[in-house]
Image (cartoon, rainbow, N blue to C red; front, top):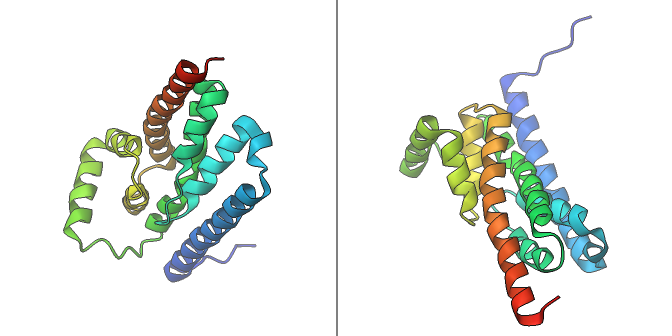
Length: 184
């Protein structure tokens, strides 16, 4: 028996709905984790979860880098950077899904056109550079990557590499400052 196919319009609504549900879930989970104090007991898993949830919110940035700094001062900075980058890169998939839905309101903007051109030309390098810079506008990069139908692994790899480089700097920086002033 043949499965019924969704119309292009239904696919758009399904993807947008999925992105909205993930964003709402991420915001609720972040609030719960913060209010319950559960992060203190989660270690690297907590860094991963907060990174993923904070970056799953589309255009509503949550500063997951703050946890990377705090965790880097007390945990292994390399492992903190890895956990943070993996979680943050996976969280960015919501922007990608929104872009792949095909109903982008940004397409007519000049900044979208320039960014799309740069992404087509530089691909993973473009994503990696923008993922390195802590900015709330990275969701737009995910939207553009989805709209351009960039392969998901390629998008995630670029996001991971950029976020990993940034997380390394933050985690080792806080580790160094903590040890310099308070010693271990």
